[in-house]
Image 1 (cartoon, rainbow, N blue to C red):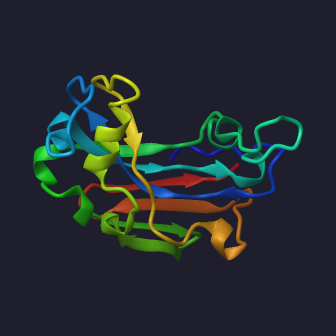
Image 2 (image 1 turned 180 degrees about the vertical axis):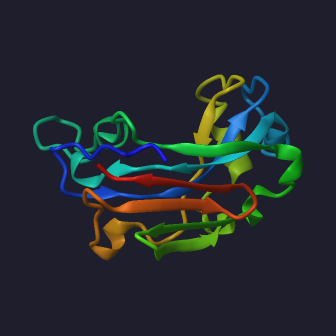
Length: 172
């Protein structure tokens, strides 16, 4: 129910319902086969993104994920964590997101480019994943950017994963 605060600098605020994997035990250089044993729980995350702030023209690097995704109030998640043992195959979960009651995204985690276990294995080759770390794992089709539709103040987003629950956040 907490509001997502729209930065004054953006006109392209977007949504992304994602399955979030919460790490439960240290993971460093884990195999794909063993990766899911490091997950304690799953939850819902809305990876809110200011699309027009992901791109920069004033810097040698053209993309700035931090500027586009890391504002206060972005990435709300919840409503609770479901133990990993209750979701034996995270690729089978059903994700959806609506804006003002209109369905914008609907699909399963099977549609993601990389499976959850592949992501964990890969990330663990770069950083040590520790208990409490949260990994947003990807989104099905239907984000606003692909449709040319963006959020505005007063909109209400509901991100849901059928096996977990839903979160609703207004845009301020």
